[in-house]
Image (cartoon, rainbow over all chains, first blue to last red):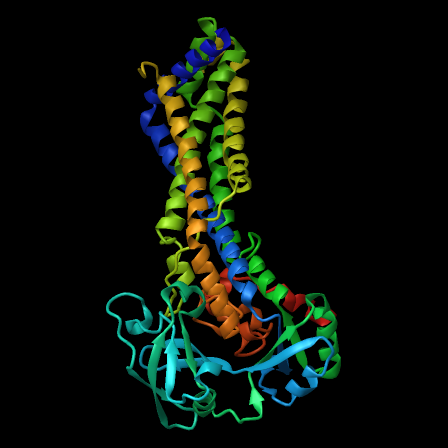
Length: 384
Length: 102
């Protein structure tokens, strides 16, 4: 009990001491909370989007075959379907027709895709939820409804009007926001694509372990093609939101250096008031170990306050506030941006990483200069 | 009851730990509730043969990063800079670097 009481007495004194420098410490906690909030927001967002991608894209084609011309993707001849189908282990090969259509009126870049269900229904389209909103911003009134007519300017200069026969569910917006499904005939008409060419081919394979062997055979048979496996698609989203890449490393670096400055300020020395306080405490009989204990509690109180607040605010920001602070960076120049809610995905490893990256270094940085002051003669410290 | 400042501090820590616990609980419940919608999205991806998430619609190589090639971000000319903001957010897909090995 004696040990606990001693700790509580020191903590009481520490909190009173922090209260005497209320303005400075409050400002410190606010900045520290913001640093942890940003760090945790980036971590939660990246982890959740990776998790979402890994769950949803399990349904992606097992293998996609593209034709390359001078390093760029080109239309692939439909005759490749027959030769690839003959490879042992290939269950099915289906041509895909898809591309991008820039709507000059709204400035939105849509993804147009031929759909087998619309094969016998030329003139009809099914649109993604994002397409149905006025100017694609998702704000304001829904401008395109079922049975509305949308004009498409074809590549031969004429205008093709297509009727909206359905709108894809809002829940699928993360994958279909900008999607317009059309019949194959309409797709070829809009982009003037001859019947013997298609955008790419998707394969279904009997045994997933044979995928790389089949990919190698296709490469041997058609050296002008490249094969993208489903595992590679899944790894793409692991890599694009990896902490080492893109904007994430920029945000993390900023946060990391802000934290270094914060900790460095503490580690490089104490203010005159703090030194005087240590001198007085030593003069009235406090041991060096008591002073270090007091400084440990000071660092722990400040960093734990900021840690809990920062993490909780980050959770609210990402999973309830739809990552509003990151939205301008994610939108970029996109006119149409999907509105989706991420399923919360957090684990103890993330919380422990944040704890060891923030609370521990700050607490240690608080103790080090105090140890230097606490070991000097109290008289000398008070005269400083 | 909370006569000492240390009591208030421990209560604050307990509330903080409780909130973190709540976060985990909320995440677990949300995963359960969203299970059906995740299955629905996966089914749409399977039926429509989609390959990518619709995160950035401004450039084709960020709209469909897994289908892109190394040249598309520099589509204007070989020394051209990648000028779409989303290109700064996303790194290149790893299979572009290993493609030649197959």
